[in-house]
Amino acid sequence: MLSFAIPITLIYFIVRICLLKVFRITWVREVLNISFVLYISSLVFIVWLYYATQTDYVLYNLIPFKTIIEYVQEFPSSTAIKNIVGNLAICMPFGFYYYFNLRIIPKINIAVYAVIIPVIIESIQLLMYFINLGMRAVDIDDVILNCSGIIIAYYMTKSLFQKKRNPAKLRRTVGY
Image (cartoon, rainbow, N blue to C red; front, side, top):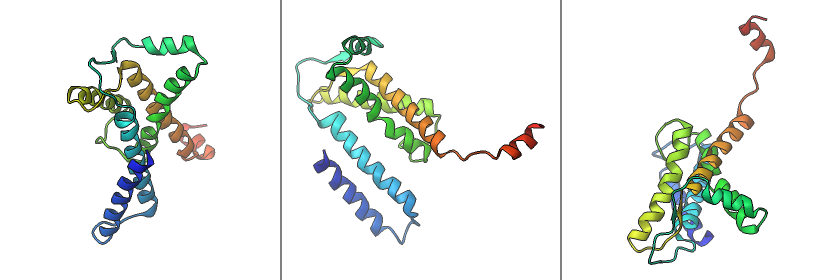
């Protein structure tokens, strides 16, 4: 994975260095951008390239919660933990980056954003099958878990970075 993600991140970094005179760069924002590129390139490797084998049939599940229920019944098997926690965690960075205005989709509501990203991931997995680039299972439960991960991470990040309100000022505005 790193052999795929690091070169892409280095190319991005070199391009940004070359554009220093054209675009004003804040270093905090640039660190976020570089980590985002590293995350996206790692995500591409994990969800579309890693273990993508060609099959003669499409592996899919369109019944919501079918595989989640199966994994919960198998819990605490390593497969169940890997799939549930992995699908939640793999998209969590999108929620973090959304909070800091690093979006790959223009400004939209977090819930819409959280649905669009996993649908794109699963759609490209299906497209890869049709163009003979390998097959990963297409599962509505992956969309549900990925979406949940994005929303959970967004609200966790929001609660961690939201400025504490001044209680005295709040009392004056509320009328206490």
